[in-house]
Length: 324
Image (cartoon, rainbow, N blue to C red; front, side, top):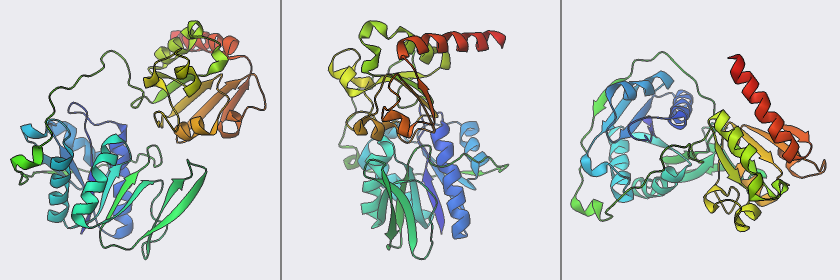
């Protein structure tokens, strides 16, 4: 019996997200009195695979097949299910990101396992197995009891701290049994945005709302995001007005993000917007209305005109960078 964690890689590299998952799986395995096994699918070199052991994985299983270069749900879910059965894993952990949302349901069906999406903590009870997840767009929590022998969990981003260990994990190569029928979906082309940080991957996001008064005033937001090595975002009214592209719209009907730092400039804080950013570790709000709802969820608040505050923040960051 073990805990299996699927660790997604990006062009052969793991990100903070993967290490958070392994840390969670390791802590969960400790509570269950077992060990955590990390699964990597794709071409990842040995040094990168070994890094998963630094976060607690006792074994790393590597699956490499040219046909698995791109995510194909049917093939990937079959591989994960085969590894889970081989390792006699009773719990399989995914991230609650796009990849996890695509794969976890298929794996749960193959293994006849109960599925809880978006868990935010370790189980509060092992018998019965009870985990907490956010509900009602993050305004409440539910304790979900899983009665099946096997369980599939997807972890909400930034809901568990990263814990490093000194662990020299063994790497094992696994060859899955796959047929051409598992690759009925054919990925013809993958277009990647180069030269900037993607919103979903950014650790720091600077976002603007209607308080910015127009697209011509977005300069300080873009400059601050660039200084931080982060990404820009916006509220839905801004994208609806055409001030910013819809790809930057965060909220319940846009992109759900969980950066380490989220700066909301001139955003009032409608429920739909807050639902998409509430998992951020730290929220800084800038609004000239002291009664704006955004201040209710912010860790830090600045009451002032974003048009005046942002340029001051840009200059302050520049000074800090100049000091080294």
